[in-house]
Length: 211
Image (cartoon, rainbow, N blue to C red):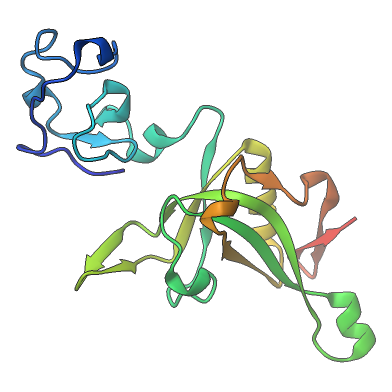
């Protein structure tokens, strides 16, 4: 996903006539297709030898890559993370992984009552798809290296509002928790809805509290 189709990346291949769908690119229907697809970007991952379909490609200049890979009704929103991987499972979270979003915040009431700092960890969203970590994922010396200081998540509009509120609440940090591949089926879920969240302004600083 996100790979640029360069010269030589594609080739014609014989295929059983009964298995050819209308979405596939055929030589009889488009003899210049090898040249036409050059410069396109893949919206989803391909397997070697898999027939190319028009709906899996986007031409450079017609749309941004991120908007091209977003499903209907979904939004892309970036949240701040740290470069050392402390809030991204040690840097092992990569695009297309599924994560839970957990908010770490200071409990003001408990801190005052006990006289020591008390932190709370509350899950906000579950099974969220990661679209990107930073600007890109580079490969150095055969290892995947995550670069950048933000993560872009695939959310619905209500989840976008919730994550923005949580990110800008005072004394609050967001952490990504990597999910097992076995536990990554199904859509993203909202653990805490926007109806359960309240933004309180204290001394000019917004803080999020639960109702």
